[in-house]
Image 1 (cartoon, rainbow, N blue to C red):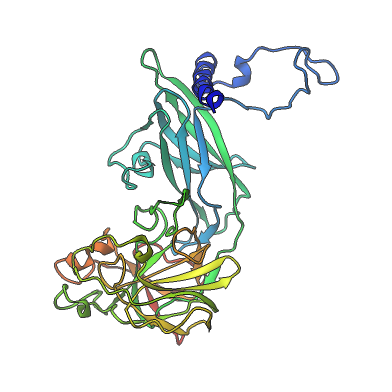
Image 2: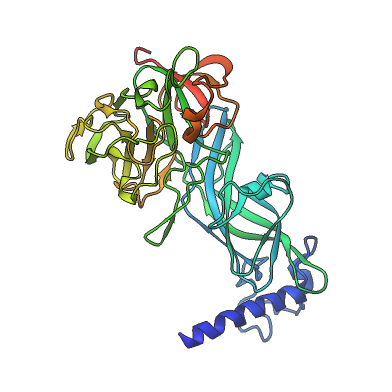
Length: 432
């Protein structure tokens, strides 16, 4: 252990020294800065002790380390785009501040740029671990301090007819910032990610007929689902990455009428929850009371009560549907039950970490909400009606002056095998 602890600062110091010598400029090739030698016909460089080309071309020391939280998978959204939505953890491995000026995602085979996060949105989409996931307002670079870890919230958007790459590369542009002298610029590849080709699992819409707001959903906006980073049992997780909160609206696009401090004023309250897919019930929790703080947010509950009364159904090996915040006493199924698609599981309530009645729904990789990883899915059929153009967090719906939501109407269209994106409004009709 003593050898390791002494070695870490030596490695960091060596990295900084190498960067200083090489220069790491954005327009320089590391091969141009290295000494050249003559190689023999068999490819062995004198004194090298091995084959020429033992390292991949462009291999170099980098000040940033990157790692993934999930295995990225494409999903079709209601914006006629295919989204590859995931996170990249960025750690500054040096003893000096690192100024990140840009982050790009490219097709590893063709080199085509798929996403370029420049200074316009960088402070919102690359955030410090432990700070607000919404980032900082404004534009410009972000400075990652020595040994700090930041999260890049990535949403690669492809046209529907564009081939999904098998592998993507991550490229960072920026500079090491020494206490004296000029910054040492660089542009370097900091890692790759294999893309799970999918397809995303198709399921039914888990609610009864009506007009429904898809709140706090995927993919680019800062929502408490999309950016719900949760370190659990030593794992970095985003279990709600593709989660949706369902709110029933009336024809006037209201979510409630009357007194917003009363749970019965909300149209969503005690609406049926139906199984999105057939499977076996692996968890069925009941008995947690509804929140009593309406319309104010409730106190944060214990971790085991986060999603309140809920049902988890295993629909495939290692794949589960979660239905959360159910009304106490309404759960209709038990562990071990076999349920069919469309079967009623219970009624919508406001139990657990919930401000107003709604259904929390997503797909995950484990039978427990914590720890698990959120995975993409699509609904087999629904009608897209429009969207709510203003950012209204579901925590505040009951605090609005009226229950009427701002609404921008689209040309209604029936959608199949798509994921409704954040703030879209859909119509569910089981007769279709």
